[in-house]
Amino acid sequence: MANMREGGFLISKIQKLSSRIFAKLLREYKAVEITPAQGRVMFPLWNSNKDKLSFHELLKITSLSKATLSHLLDNLEKSGHIKRIPPRGDEDKRTVYIKLTEEDKELQEKYVEVSNQMKDLFYKGFTEEDIDEFEEYLKRLLDNLTDYNEERESQ
Image (cartoon, rainbow, N blue to C red; front, top):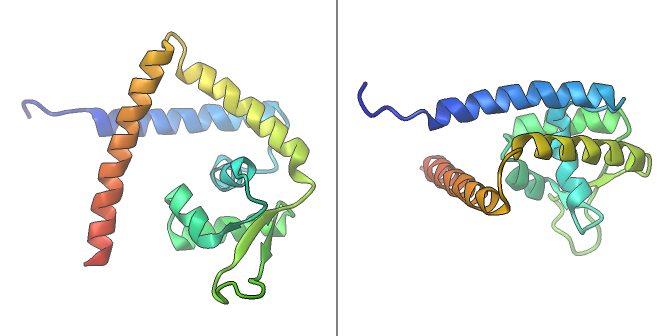
């Protein structure tokens, strides 16, 4: 077991602990209408400069499986957070778009506040340069895993 690296193990522990803290903060902010998992879908919609995103765009942004994303979207639609919009005009007939509902403005504000608290927790004691370097490493890790996954799926 010489030279065993802990990166994956540490990332997994960080993800689990941060999810628990994030869920607790959401409850404290009375933003429990959505789960952290649903927030993974809502956040890209809130941050998009478009009024709607396609199912395929959300798949790529969230790195979720089709089944998981569909399930989360079903629940978000049932609870009134999103609407599915069918294609119009010359758009691909197979493309379904996801759009936020108007009721989500207050929820978005709460979620952003909690996200900012999490950012402060994550980066406590880090300089801006530390953060930039760390996030660059994370992007490289994600690119490695994405490339591997895409290669495996194309076989």
